[in-house]
Length: 81
Image 1 (tube, rainbow, N blue to C red):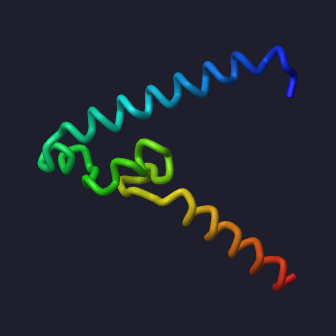
Image 2 (cartoon, rainbow, N blue to C red):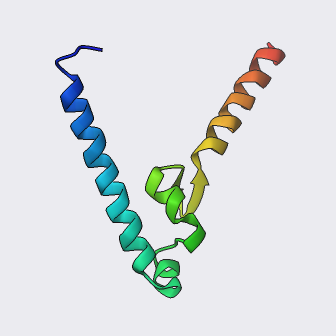
Image 3 (cartoon, helix red, strand yellow):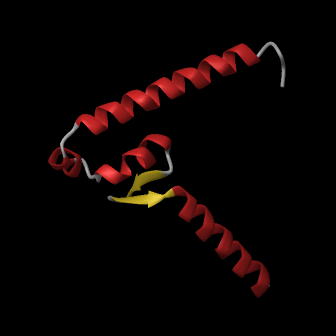
């Protein structure tokens, strides 16, 4: 890593962490009915904040599961070829 870029990357990381913590606090402050109105269950807040789950076509998708599915499809194509 270029030593000159290190401070900028550190500041970006800290700012991203602050944004995530603010979002987590704001979502956690909502009652369950309001969370349901925006399509989030209370147990999904951390996943939404960290990006582990995201909204696609009206439903929440686990990003890790997506990667696993893609990897399985690629493996199946390789073995079929």
